[in-house]
Length: 136
Image (cartoon, rainbow, N blue to C red; front, side, top):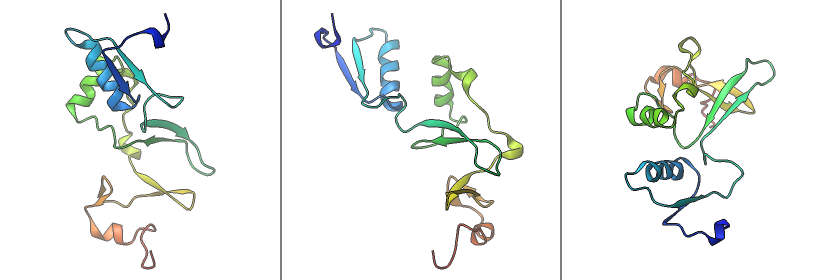
């Protein structure tokens, strides 16, 4: 029997974090339903992606891409990682090197001190950052 011959109770469109979380909820439900996850790209995870990069003249670094950060202080995110058996794969940040960068003219430039989730909390470092200029 092929997938086209199979009847599903639920079709989940998209293998991003929402689709995968929905599949996990259906799989672990008291009365699991027969479901299929439909993903159009060649990888799972949707917008969430981890890349290990190294640019000339810089130390290698990890680039996290996605709709939002995976903030481990949120209990539901850690709980889901544990349920999926992935908690050992979580990479903590290095407090000595904790910094956020943005690409400016193809080079990583650190966000100034006092920027929390891209919102400035300290005006002075933000004002003197090479990322900010009067002409824009």
